[in-house]
Length: 166
View (tube, one colour):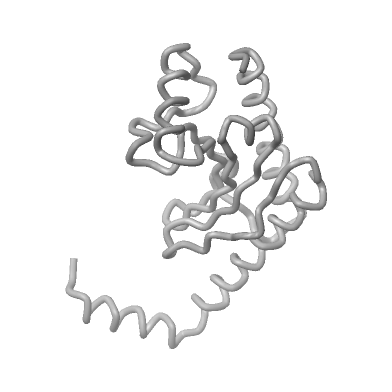
């Protein structure tokens, strides 16, 4: 691993080509349109106005169904830059909530989705890969795949939470 100056020299060379800016801008515009799509298609869900752009590690926005909100839980629709894939996560309002629900799910042996090994050191409780190899040449089709997977994830969580009771 080089020093900061070497990294910045490489970064500058890449920026001079101009392609990284176009790709990043296109990806962020897609994420914003995906957020707007969920807001419009699912008015029963709270989709806060913020898109977390990240440090080129991950970009995400939250989707908060009423059943999850009352438990201080939310769903995050996430693009992981290095893995170059879309995931959906169950997250808590804070680490304490994450640990509580992680322990509850572990205790029930629930394994439909991948449990995060350490919810105290993570941004999620559960994680699921929605699209491992996204094809950005057909954004409508990509959006549909993401939508179907996200809605199924939310439905599965709502079913689980109703089993758990209040």
